[in-house]
Every structure is written in structure tokens, then in C-alpha cells.
Image (spheres, rainbow, N blue to C red):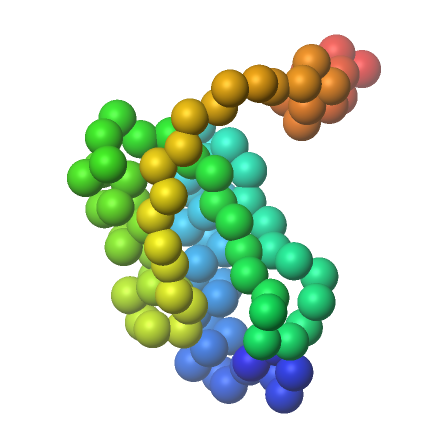
Length: 99
């Protein structure tokens, strides 16, 4: 899909995937989402999101349209943030709102 271009079905799934992530971002569930810039078999995306339990996190992941349609694969890695930089993304958003 990344090297030869997506089929119409893949493109639709990716569009639905992005809309799903935007909805989760607006709901303050997603903290960050993106993908690597390489376009080969090693490319991957990461979505960092908050969930009250591992079961809820799994449900969020499995509800992604691209996962449900088999266009993308996902693995869940429960994670605990130990450090967060004061210059992190949240500060950029705060600065933009204050401008």
C-alpha cells in the first residue's frame, strides 16, 4: 500500500482510520498518533492513548476501522509514563491557544 499506492478499499479504510483517531483526539482519549516516514516493510504507526483498563484499551484498538477491515495490524502495549518534558507537545498547544 505504501510503495504501490492503496487500493480504493485501502484508501477508504485509511480515511476512516484517520477520522476515528481525530474523534478519539477530540474526546481526549488519544494523546499522540503518527507513523514513520519510511515507505517500506518496516514502516509502522504509533497511537498513544488513555484508557481506564486494558480491556477498554483493547476495545478502542479493535474498533479502529483499519484494524477491523484488516488493512492495518495492531498490538497493544500497556505503558506507564515515567517522565514528560515540559517542552512536550502539550506546551506547543498551550502556546498556540495563548497567542
